[in-house]
Amino acid sequence: MSPNKGIYGENMARVLIVYHTLSGNTEKMAQAYAEGAKSVKGTEVVIKKALDATLEDLLGCDAIALGSADYFTYIAGALKDFFDRTYYPSQGKVTGKPYAAFATGGRGGETALEVLDRICGSFKFYKAVDGVAAEKAPSPEVLAKCSEAGKKLANAVVK
Ligand SMILES: Cc1cc2nc3c(=O)[nH]c(=O)nc-3n(C[C@H](O)[C@H](O)[C@H](O)COP(=O)(O)O)c2cc1C
Image 1 (cartoon, protein in one colour):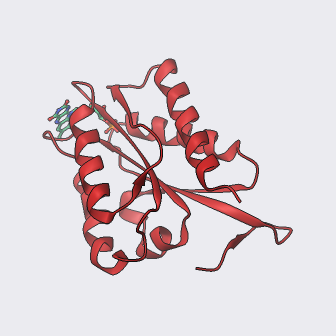
Image 2: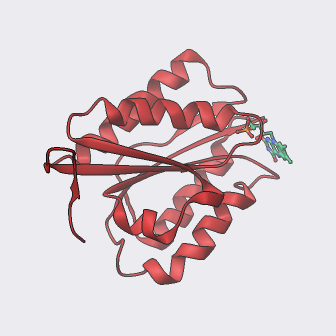
């Protein structure tokens, strides 16, 4: 994989954030991850809704953050679709890629977080940061944790 270049031709670490949201709670967390990752010099952030995210996005990033709401004690179908589309063609090409997971749920989001960890294990990603879970709309404290986690993820891959 050729390195991602900044406007001055410098090598940039690319952090991809993929999420799905219906009422905006997970999106707020995704934005906080993006802010945290962007604060690390030499990092470029690509933020995508799961239905728009592609295999090329996955292969082209240095680290990935994945976020979902808990719908029916599972992750969002849209994010599952991203995993389903990219699993076979990415196998062997994403082993050890650092990831961070985040989730929100009416009862705390822990179930969706566990599902995300399990799926990320199947991809053979490397858990670089502890997951962040929120009950319904993320509080300022949770958003601060998301920002910190995004920063940590970027620091794991910055060149
Ligand atoms: C169709 C649907 C199913 C849901 N099922 C669950 C569930 O099983 N467990 C839970 O804790 N919350 C459940 N919720 C609540 C959402 O996880 C919660 O409102 C979440 O914060 C929504 O995030 P979003 O704004 O990013 O869509 C469900 C919500 C919807 C719309």
